[in-house]
Length: 373
Image 1: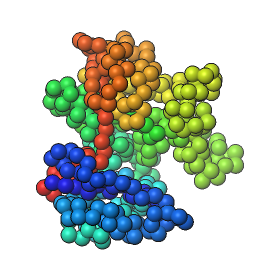
Image 2: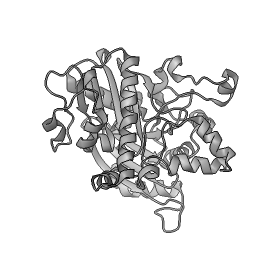
Image 3: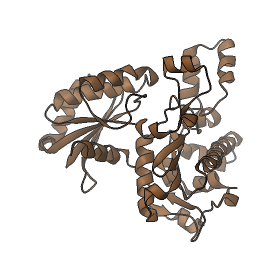
């Protein structure tokens, strides 16, 4: 079965045609600067028609289309076949992800118009985290205000965390239902999730993808009082929004959102870059310790995403000082130049440490195939 996976942004369309049985990418590409001067297409509808031209005869092999949707709110707890009611539901929760859901919807509408003869499936970043208990999902604010505005912890990167957890269980040769895992999705966007028996029980992102770990341009956790202080000091709501989402994290601390630049600067003696790495690692250790306590034990810590998969020195830094919790790295395994899923802890360690490459597109394709197959 072949599934066409679409990840639609406000000015881009990323796509892959995936053979689910072999897990092979048949064709992949991206349109950029949609709706902008000199861009690949004037709008998403024209962009999707261009994508179909690129697919050529392969378009006739598509059995389903899988769409990434960032926010499902409380409405969507699992992948769903898209119809007008589902589109309306995605639109209804768009206030919770105003930069993402409208763009996801634009891609959905364009793809449904271009490929009307196959089922379209929405796969939500937030769905995996709907298993969190109320104690983890609830913010301690007035319950009526929270209910009226949908204010709670939703979590994100759920497709990646779920996929990686399954691959980690296979690597360990144990049923996922028996495992207690902490998955660290470390990239330009970053999140940590505690997974007990295949179910998310806590995660670092919250109402939006802004909370939790230090990211490329996002602050992660910050005292809400600091935001009130900035507002009273004269910054507008939009200015605070841009500060926290676009001018913070590694960029705010070290002047670059690219971890490679920050590492190089730190190695050359830049004190700001070194502090940025220290804050980044401190925040990760904070969540590892907290989630070990929430899980009541731990079988493995799993690194994934761009930084987690490709930066041995940063993996070591993130877990430094946690040996008393059973977390240790084998230097040779950690630094081995391979991109395969692997164990990087010493033989016989009380807690395994793994590197497992994520593949959100494949996860979306598998979810769509399972739903409509």
